[in-house]
Image (cartoon, rainbow, N blue to C red):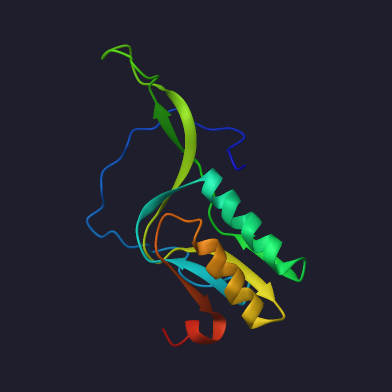
Length: 142
């Protein structure tokens, strides 16, 4: 699974919600012909990314190329169960990528558009937010 090799700060603060909660980067397809775009905001953890990646690679059966456009680098801490208040912040439990609407999560390049759409549709079931399958031809009109 995806975790950072080295981090500047081991624990992060939670952060505040943004006034405009839409993505400004990673909106366009850069590598492949087809992509999976997020329509909602959520936290995407490394297990969910790996589950979706395995679904896509299993379906396309080495007939294309896959790019993962996100990397989980935000540490999420968790306290042990039945712990009293005080004693500081918990240890790092897992890493997430905070997804905002409009972000392209996966990109895919295959010879068959039907295979690409079906692979991305199946991967969307593994993700905790609504998505849309986009392509280079449709992408220019939207």
